[in-house]
Image (tube, rainbow over all chains, first blue to last red; front, side, top):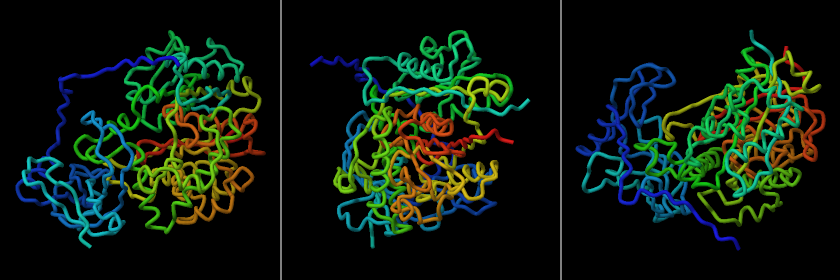
Length: 154
Length: 385
């Protein structure tokens, strides 16, 4: 056997200096979850589609959206999967804990789907169309992690 | 002045899971030399080059610059196009535009990848939004699994229906010496393989591959002098449908639907199922072989499973799909879309050897990216009007 020598590129203790802007619409969305546990979408003035995550422009109509509408907090599973294979999370460099439920949640009143964890303690309940509600983090900081996961309430 | 465009030569490597014997430019060179040989051209005959891959798989940027010794790009016009999974099809569309513009007569198009050189799932994840997508997204398989769940819920399809597609593609790969995985599997073996992300089993999805592909396109002024029976490009289309992963219509591939309708309209095709003779689709997992042929309009919504079970897409069927064994058998990602293009061209030119479909008039090839964006090409035996 030929021994393989790998070239390892690592950051050591150094952080990777990415600093992403959430944007005006995302900032309001996260502030509203943090302060009031409410979900806000935006509605297109032309086609009426309600977008989650909120954003400034409806891509289909290419018009500016200004009307905020509250959606959820309950909704249904639009689609989902249960991740069972081990993989390295590029955000942390560590292996992501599996299995976990990956949900695409359709909030009541929204037309697009919101991605988050689904609690899979009882896998038999996880199906397309099942009703869900969010479980919020006790300490909320204004990020996607202010929601811990969604749970089936059927 | 706009010119009609034809493919006059193709070349590809013998794709493998690992090619530690070559670096990127050496791998690229293998495909380029085979394409030049196929077209009986020399590097001096090439007027421009389009090249692409998915940079972050290897963590090396600017392949247009560092690969020139292997690509033949030294002191020639060369441009890089990179669009994720669709890259291989995008470079072909870019080459088509360059030749069609009338500014270049002979363009060399290259797609390549060495997926063995890093972590594919991690790299794919970094193509998605850090705020909204990355918390739960786990590379291509996770998004594809969500599509399959939605399709099954909407139309009552089963994991057996998906497995039947995988059995087909893996059988077809037996006829293709370039495919990485050449081993027939049974329906039961697919269903018994490890569950990766419900409902996708290990044998429902593509492997990671090292490989390269090159295609030479020529304008109508020179094409038939290079190759008496070239593969004419009848049309191309590209569609993107969303910003965040939750925006898509899960269970339907709207980019495929709208792009293919554009192609059928351009070519005057009314019944694609009857008028196409072969399909080489960027179908990285089995369920895509059900859902996406419905979006192409080959069959109606929910009708694909029965159409597949009846053998219509097998080699001897009404419309053979993926005679090469497809992406499930081989996926060097930046090359994969261009391999589909090359395989479709070989079918039209009658050069597909053991995987040749008889009397091909129209062939379709596609690229698929990230999740839910699609590029595509319609190939034909006759010169477009």
